[in-house]
Length: 502
Image (cartoon, rainbow, N blue to C red; front, side, top):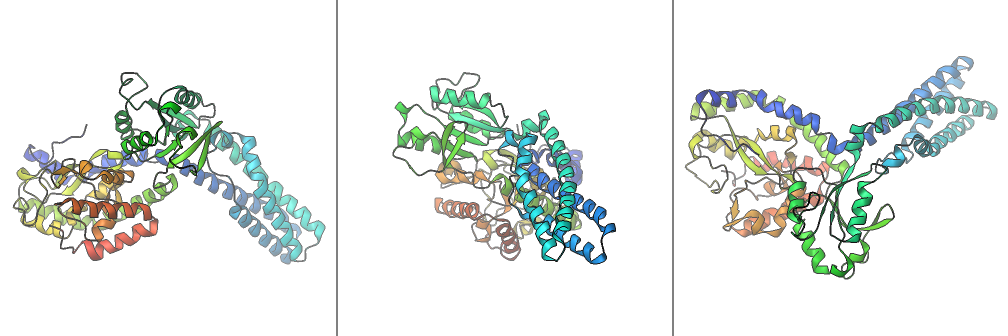
């Protein structure tokens, strides 16, 4: 459970400890940095394999060049050097199956060797062709290419053997296993659950079976859709398969189920018997002999999430180091202006609807803070301190959220997170607009596309909320690294001096 103690009820010593020791904030950051690679294990291993292959080929080429050059003239040695370089580039650029999605095959050394045959032979052909093209005798070209081929194959096989041993480690197997939830009941759901549970290749793991009813909610494995949504907030979930009996399949059943799962950021598949009257042209994927149709894709792939996370960590650390002297000055001003802690912690809703504590510089009087944000901050709010007014106007109060970024709870760019009790038009945000929860598909951000377009500040009407949500969903659809960088730059130009900040 989240500590909701907030900014009140502390002793003077506790307030000093909370406000003055940023190291306390960094302890969970360090733990999170160690835990964070697991969601990206497939992407990390794919990158490791790519670099491992390149290093093996480069090492083999260098060794072959070392063996060949003493017996060659200077001109011949230059030709061989050029041929070695071209061969390495051909191997590097040749399309190869480094992906770990076909996990059972990648774990087998024989299968890995088959993946490497074509790129290695293509590189060898390029090596021989360049030697001949540069007027080296054909027989000598073939001999030298053979030496290069042998020198490259040996380190490649050694590296792949080490990789195979690594992939059989229990911790790696558990990290690579994709968790899949089944929504439905009957023989089809049972068959899919059985296949996933007993997957010999360790590609998949069963997250649970969830009938679209409360009838089996007390079962150890089964539960309602609400249980599925709640569990997905705290456990890794890769995909959901809708597998209802044919007798119950209707378009409204599928739509109602998808609506109930709309806040879950994962792929959703349907079995072919469920597409009648919905869409007969859905993309296909396969789970063993079972054909599945893709109903929904997560907005960002694992690789894209990994790229975004790397950007967050690199720029977040740089920003904290660069801004450290300024943050110390701000902390002193807050302490001198009013009694209370420097930092204010408030529950916010993040990715998958998970609650977390957001860090901000305190801009209100300590005994008047509203943790649940039932009352939003308004212009000329009497709860805001003198220093706090300028902190909020210049968005300086948001800078401590860099700690949330390093902990993996937030991103530098994304939809702004709201407190659980925030309302628009008198309604909680989840209830006010059905599309609101789609923002939960990505991590919330310190800044976002909505904010630089003026959609920030107090949410008064449903129109305010709708405008902000539309801009947030546009950001999710358009996401790219360059788009994130563009928003960061525009934030400095537009948001910091926004008239909507108070």
